[in-house]
Amino acid sequence: MENLAKILILLGGVHALGFAVFHLYFWKIFRWKSELPKLHFSNQAILQILNIRIIYVFLLMAALCFFFTNALYETSLGHFLLAGFALFWLGRTIEQFIFLRINHYSIHILTALFILGFFLFLLPFFISI
Image 1 (cartoon, rainbow, N blue to C red):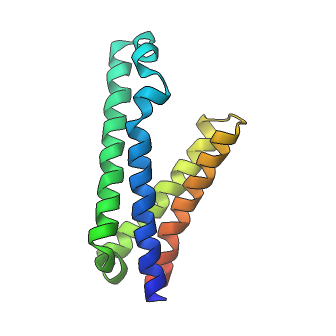
Image 2: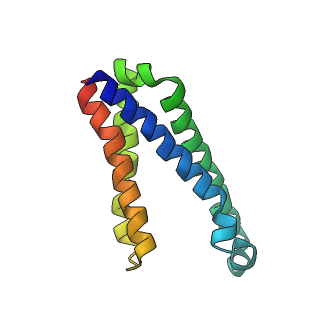
Image 3: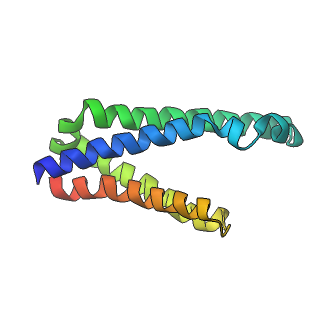
């Protein structure tokens, strides 16, 4: 079970890294060069700052998974972080249904990826305790 938990943690790192890369493309995907000017200047800034900060969070999450796999599995701080990461993805899944109620296949794929993130961190947490 220990190996399974560590593999799941590493997959969680890949998952987080994938979302970091995805967020790097937000400017292009959502045409922010032409869309953001429609917003008030402070909203433009806030949106971009929050996106950059979430990229940082995802990169930090990935780095912890890749370089501190054993610590995440074996220590109480690691268990706390795994639970926190799982709750992050659970919260993001719930927010999807509150704020982004669009019936489109791409939204459903994202929702599935959020749920995947929840389980990638929840399962090692339960295996490790």
